[in-house]
Image (cartoon, rainbow, N blue to C red):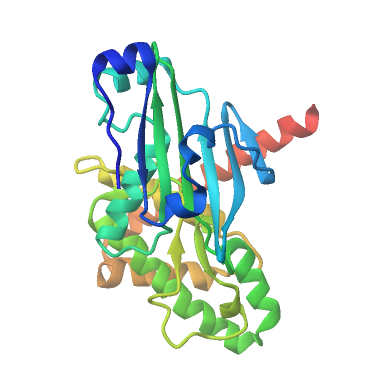
Length: 295
């Protein structure tokens, strides 16, 4: 469900709200949610950086309960504000860009969270703010936490079988994205989620049990896709340095992702480039850590 953007005069002199939400959102968020959402105090798991905040927000109404992660952007580029003034349907804010990406992903069957509500505050005079409320994946864990947990909860043989099925599904999801020339651009292990219950057992079928989050940078690249594929896979390789992940697991991912083509000389060259890019990520991380420690 969406609400309009008014006239140019209204956007310039008065300011307007461009809102989208799921049908169940107004009932649980309240009739005046749009007037207060940028000011509402939300402190659970609160994080703020450079004019944007994110926090876990629990809403309750009668017998209904909804938990979302509320992302708010208070200081967006002035240029984007003026572009939204002139072209209000252009999704100039990170909130509405991510809303669009989540809807596109869901439309093709990719397992992503549901965006409950999102919006832009356009004007007056070029001011620009936005928000996005994404439903929490309740009872789920990011893989950088889930894999070490499963390593402790499962015996070694079962854990190897657990990883094999999980990696197969991760590779299938990643390949699904890349075959469409879509690239996540933050494809780290922490952006894949599974049910915590699945760290106690080996699911019979992983195909419906892995979710992908944080699609705010998702983009399609028809012509420069080889470079973006290298970056996505290098990010995943770099982030796989967690307890429980071994070299054989990385090789299994490559085998599933590339299929029979993995033996081709061009794929072997591609793997070298992926490893080099992952090494660059590690080097940058180490450099930043040294700078922080020196302060």
